[in-house]
Image 1 (cartoon, helix red, strand yellow):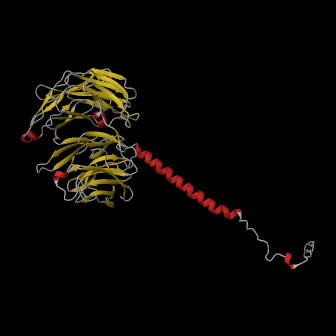
Image 2: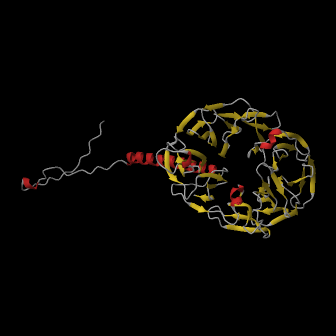
Image 3: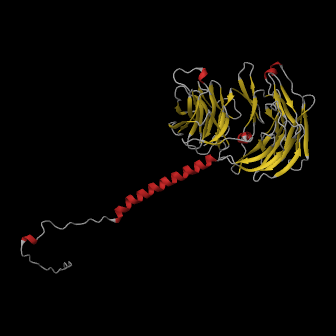
Length: 493
């Protein structure tokens, strides 16, 4: 049986005239369904959430990069001098020792006094000062060109620096060097948190020093041209071991090397010694000689990450060569080692060499992974699996694993390339242009320093500004951007 339709009561209303009847039906207001409104709102929220996640990841990446040594604080086109080193703090600026947000090192005041200081990297103000040597009469002859002493971080122990306080210096002649031994020579161990002295011991005659885990090591010249290397507890001063190294052999070419400096440095296992005119000796942690006579007449490098050492020398044909020393066979590569102003560790073991070609090697191997022909690189960055090179033809970005070129940014005509650093947001390239127009000659240099910000993604130029004052170039020390020029150095930002 079908259901009966429901009856509705209807009331009829009469109108007196047609003029009272509306000409059009009343407007009907449309009310959207909340189901359809929710779709675009949900889409907007989803996009906003995705962007928030992307932004959070980028902030996290920037924070990780900011912790990498050599990555400087953010820089923009409003570049200015923050402070200029005074009262002997130049050496603090270049020490590279950072602790609790301060730069720590040994300051030499004009009156001859010395102090271990912690300097605020943004203002140059001293956070603490620990005097370690009183004022002394200044040598009227100038005190020699190269002083002995300074501070190094103590490995494996946070908040510790070891400093050699000395008035010994090297006096250079035209083709000679003489060590002028002073009357002051002490090893001082300092807490970088507050400047407290934790150890202070005499080190008579020391011309070089370094810090090993739990040990302070000094080198003192012996009468026959040799060197006495002594390791002691930096707090108690008790001797741990003592080794005497003979005078290194010499040949006719040694007359070309007049550095005269003795160097001590720590490695992953033991330490190294370089005696003038550039012969390297390797010692084990107990001070026993394991190798000697290594040619390092062009210098040496210690890898900050692996603490392995490379000896720099010249081949018979005059070309630079680099010998990597490790537990296995030596690996000798031709060319100059490309300096990395920052390396985030995304490509472990990468070694870059340059002569007329840039070549990338895996550490310990003599066959290149990839190369870039007709390019000479002075320095580079390794960031997020890419290598960014400052070359004589401009900036080049390559995949660090394959060598695939990703982009190339040529410099404007008349510019010369300088150092390449980063603040994590841009590639910051120091460049120099002549201070003149028209045809450029050698007499037009030095010129005007510039800092240029390039994008990581495509090498596009975001801004270009002149460096303040008479600064010609930049470099990074720790997280601080340092400018340099004829009048000296300055912190910029």
